[in-house]
Length: 148
Image (cartoon, rainbow, N blue to C red; front, side, top):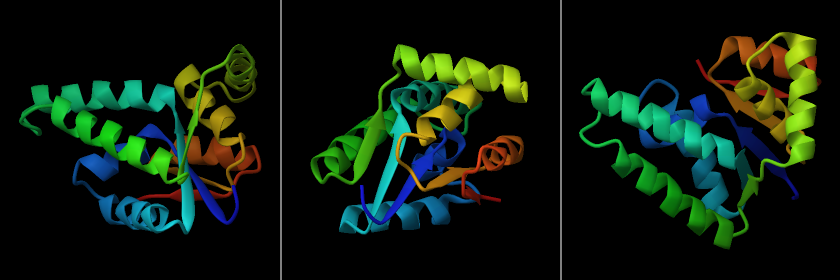
């Protein structure tokens, strides 16, 4: 990866497919990725977490069908992978072990520690809408883009 590379946690990723505060920031990043000016990334875990959020939003009546934004996420991810503008992080045993260490170090959920550990796989920015997670990522030396 060269240039700007940004890891998106689930709170940031959701904003691409559901209009809410911060969507414009994520959309701008995706435009850069589509043009080849930036590389974005997230882990396969984020896709699972996003599906839970989309389903929850549908049950709350905020989305008509939670599967539609998931299909868009998967389709756009395939396109960005083919453009080499997306780096998809696999959940490996080593990554999980690193995440567990972060759980005990920062007293955070495994899902949050997995985001930090995944972002260490070659990204120079960490994008999130979660203030607590942003603080922990900064504690780990990451350059954070906090979406308000």
